[in-house]
Length: 370
Image (cartoon, helix red, strand yellow):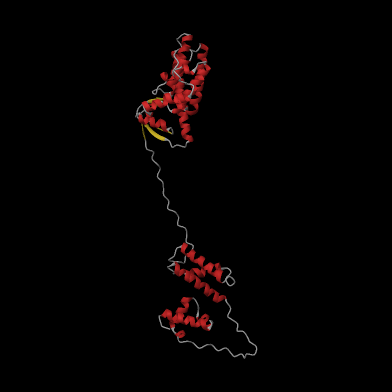
């Protein structure tokens, strides 16, 4: 056997460069029957087999036995036929029993419905080989049964591992409709059958080979529930939203606490009165004015009337109400005071400067000159 010049098949880099990279360049990824993971598993098995049988991996021309059109099982059998030695009768029996037991365990866990078909196939093969001599029967069992079962086991295990990996990645399953009969490992698929699998690579392989077609998964109808409208907080206010009323309410609270903290320590108790005062307001700016005027009106109600100071030596005279001005007798003057937020009695308790100011404002309100 001639040793390839400086080719080290015990190194994974050699497998990747001389096999995988070469295949991709020559035939393309889709025509390669093995995945990169399968080729790496074959590499590990080859080195273990050479180590157990005391064979130098560099003595084997792997590229001559492993080609792009072989599956993992086919490539493994090709290398095993080269590096392996014919088993003895006892070894054949033991390998046969171990293979059957291992296959039964794997299939029973993942595909219990296929176990009966597997037992039936094994029984048929055993019945066919009963008429052969013992040594020849053992050899035929290994060649026809053990290799066939081992090959199917590898295909089944590959599918199981692919599905487990897809489940770990939380990949949604792909629904396929089988177009023609085929087998994968020990599983048989019939034309017209619909299956679901999380193995995306396997599904794409079947679709590319026109063995199956993808079936669209119909999503269940989703009932759209309109969001519930929250109840209004300020039910008496007609034209402003709750957010706008909250802004005016905050202005009312802040103005009362900053200007008259002693007279109005808790402005929140006037909430109902505040809501009534702005129920017909249509603009936030107008609402701010209403809020500040309401604070002033409340302060005037709470503030006691001034007590006249007594100066020693002054003579006290009975209280004489001031003479009424002409504008105070007009009917619109009371309307003006009501809009400002004070009553006629409160107006009369104002000082002289205050009453003069109110009369000037009334003339401006009426559009009259000073």
